[in-house]
Image (cartoon, rainbow, N blue to C red; front, side):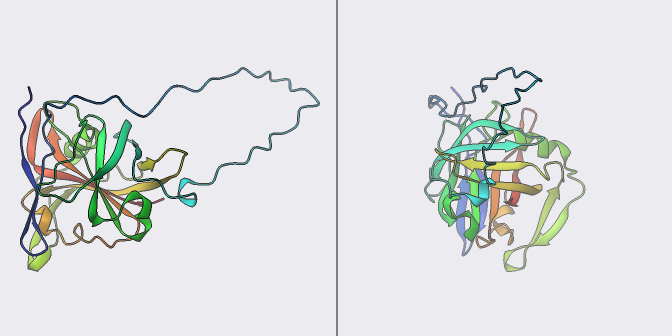
Length: 245
C-alpha cells in the first residue's frame, strides 16, 4: 500500500483562495488498462526497380495537426524530446480544492475545468494540465519532472513579478525547449504545442506567480507536477510551458 501524501500546489490564487495538488504519491486504486495503442505499423519491402507503369503516389500530405479540427475533451497525451511520454491519456478534472488529478496515475493526465481552457478551445487562452510525479514510483509526469529538476541550479534563481507585489523565484532550464506536446482524440483531431520554458518554483510561491496565474494567454499550455530528484520529493513544483506549434 502506498502512503498517500498531499502537497500544496498553489497556496494563493486570486483573493486568498487555497489551492492544493496531490502529485507526489501513488494511490491504492488499480490501474486501468491503457487505452492508447502503440503497435508498430506493418512494413512492406519494395523493389528498387520500379515498374515502368507504376504511377507516382497521389496521397495528399496531411495538414499540420493545428490546422485540423479541435480535439475532443478526452484522448491521448504524448511528449517528444528529452523527456518522452507515450501511452498516456487525458481527461478533465473539476476545479475542486485540493486539486488531485485522478488516476490511473501512471498513465492519466487531467486538464482543469473552469480554470483556463480545455484542449478543444486551446487557442483562446491557457490550458492547465496536471499529472503526478513521485520519487517512490514512476508516474505519468516523472519523465519531465526528473529531467527538469536535474538540470536546474537551485543557487541561481530568476526573480519574476508576483501578485500583490510579491517577488517569485524561478529556477529555469532550457533543457526541454523545442520539445513537442500533443493532445489527440479519436479520429486524429488534436493540438500540438512546442515547449518554450521549464522551471522549478517553490510550492508556497506558485500561486503568487502572476504570469502562471494568467489564464488568458492565447494558445499556451502549462504542465504542472511535483519536483522529483531521484527518490526524493522536493518542496518545488515543476512547470513546463509551451505555445501552439
